[in-house]
Length: 555
Ligand SMILES: *[C@@H]1O[C@H](CO)[C@@H](O)[C@H](O)[C@H]1NC(C)=O
Ligand SMILES: *[C@@H]1O[C@H](CO)[C@@H](O)[C@H](O)[C@H]1NC(C)=O
Ligand SMILES: *[C@@H]1O[C@H](CO)[C@@H](O)[C@H](O)[C@H]1NC(C)=O
Ligand SMILES: *[C@@H]1O[C@H](CO)[C@@H](O)[C@H](O)[C@H]1NC(C)=O
Ligand SMILES: *[C@@H]1O[C@H](CO)[C@@H](O)[C@H](O)[C@H]1NC(C)=O
Image (cartoon, rainbow, N blue to C red; front, side):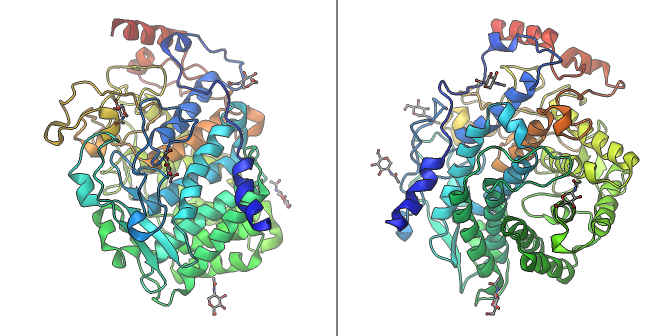
């Protein structure tokens, strides 16, 4: 009986979704100017709502009765049958149809971390129920993908089959093999990364916020669900640490993950998992293990990107956050401030090894070539999170300003005057913004040899999707086949959720410069920008909305 309750309660406790549902607003709504004094700023609320809506469009399996995306259908409902498990559900990773656990884990960890820090932004925008639904759709699938303590499914679908198919969700090739790691064929990175996601989300669902300048966790407190997540986190961590097959990267056990999502190492994954476990379960032992991995894998003094494969910069910030919030773990805040500030100073001073495009986007050779906005937005997210802990007000300002510059870039302050989100705000935002995402489902086409022209116009609007981004010279080509620039992916949206939630809060709940009332672009903004975005205190004013509506009416 107790056992049954355990299974049923988490489902019952899911927040009920608003009725009528939030949908990306139509053009007439967008023409309403927003008031500078309205908290939350409706533009940020809309952005946050659309960013979450993108995840609804990526859902796999039987869609829930609350499906908001009218053009999506149930799909891949037999996933897992090949191995005797139900692995249906979860999310399609990007513009195609594989389900990949490693980048999904990073996405969920990132979103939960942001919702711990800036949960009021979700609450004020009335998006917390959608956040809850979005997280559970991913976490409940990860629970299914972790059917025993030392088994984790890391890939469903074949990248080869997938690369040969371009079409909608009704004709996805049925050949969708399921691949797992286990005790004899381990994957330290994938197991630890999944552990980190479960642990970070356990902290969120336990309402375990960091103090300091953060607002509060989003209001989705559910101790039962948190405990379930924590149990999976602990089991996966033990699996990562103690598998009899040893410690190794997961592609050595599952070569099929191949070029799509191979991992470069696991020291960062072990460390961040141990840290989130320490925080979620208030455990000094996990904290000390994190310190030990940090030494063992020589994670100090790195200047790497922060992304699904490279979590070390996040480790620096999380150590600092944990120590600031609780002295019970031991450790010294100033040690971690020094580490963080070395890392962030190098970025803002331009000597981290990354470059910037001529028009100002932070660019890591290699990592940024496949999707330039993601490293920059992840840096903006970490800088914004760390800024309130900076040792001097000068550093705090520099970090906030740099973070703002990257966010502004994505929202239109760039040489193309383009907004690198799909129609995040009503409809055609401007001629230079993307309208041809590399998304088989949204395109409506099924001719793999002519994906750019068949059909001429994208069939469905993929609201809220952050796309890959421009090239190293700041040029952007709105062409479906140019996947590094136009593809969408679960992890691309993740940092933007946190930034939008942060900016959607009143100033007293967020860091200076990072809140609805205090947000403005620098005076030195380009002239071109004024045409596209007039930002005085807020992002979009009536002028732009009017412009948008005219354009929309012409279509
Ligand atoms: C999906 O929905 C169909 C039809 O309602 C049902 O027969 C099937 O059992 C469902 N599958 C899962 C995994 O829930
Ligand atoms: C959130 O919901 C409340 C209560 O229904 C409403 O007053 C408020 O305007 C909503 N805020 C947003 C941003 O939709
Ligand atoms: C969902 O099914 C409808 C009706 O068959 C179809 O028009 C639509 O294109 C499908 N959606 C996708 C993403 O394939
Ligand atoms: C956070 O809380 C701890 C106690 O739990 C306290 O020592 C510390 O000063 C607090 N930090 C801030 C910035 O409020
Ligand atoms: C790994 O195994 C050792 C030896 O049995 C045990 O002491 C340790 O707690 C295990 N570590 C984890 C994280 O489970």
